[in-house]
Image (cartoon, rainbow over all chains, first blue to last red; front, side, top):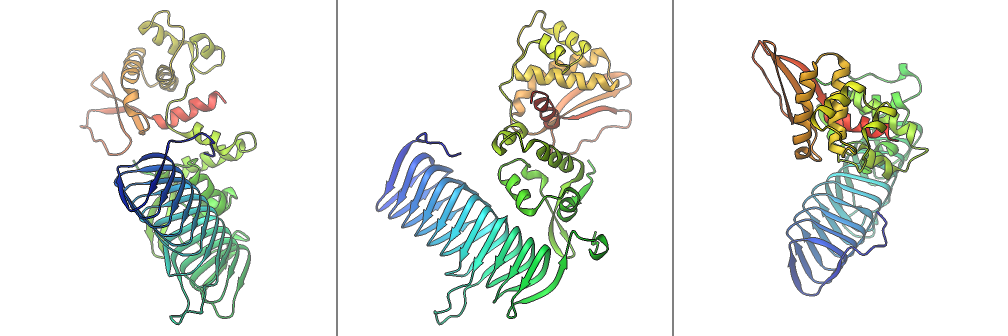
Length: 213
Length: 207
């Protein structure tokens, strides 16, 4: 995936532009961009608004403005400083967010690092390391929250997260979390100010594991 | 088709892999998206897998991951054709197909020297079918013809091959994996082969 070969042309948007999609080397959006099909590029940089009606592939992407993708997002790494909205899945190696995001499907990444600057939501998170840092509380509205159904990974650290199930090897549930079920293999740490419904250790002895189906 | 499913939890316990590995392999397309089957349980939505295929695939990945990169493995598991081309003699020498399957080939293409991937796959499938002992040589020839002419239509789509027989008359056809088929009571399904599986096995032979 990491080829040096140029994929195509540069596309820079100042003002408003629309395209049917295609392959680009570098896409930079300063104003307002819209793509009616699928788009592929090596580098994506969005400072304005960018709307993709199909799927997006971007080797590296930096989002300082707003991006909306109707289908899946694929690529190598993503850095969100603004706002990201993906209706499908998001498959990348590295996902870093210092803004807010909304993913309709699965966020699947090797390393996930989230600092919550706005309320975010995603259906599922899966990956190797998943870290959600505490949100910034200086705003009068109170803490920002991450809402997710299932979180599964090897090393998980969560703050200010509302989840149904968290499963992993090393799990840390920090302050501000509300998790219904935690399943862990090796270690589990729970903050005093977190609320956890059920916690089970799996993979040790079969008799400790409740067989559900 | 009735499928035997296993839960994600059970898979991880049986194989000893971690969530991180499973998601990485999914991301790298080593495990097809269709195998992640979402079902509702009383604890909420959970993911299930086709048991036999999944366990087999995990074992393959685990045994190969020291020698091959994830991208190389992904290419191997993809249902698309590969750029392998071989001569019939090599196939026989490497024990990929038997002599009787080659006879079927020579009957249709006398004196062929190099086989393209589609032909190779057709030949391999015919060989698999012949080995089961359920089909005649005439059926094999028919299968080979059907496969060779139509298999490229299913590029990147999973399909299966069926051989049916009614009152001693055989027929064979290719259809996509999705969707059920029903026959009248006199018709017997003699053989059903999943071509994605065959392609995978065939590619493994060249590793």
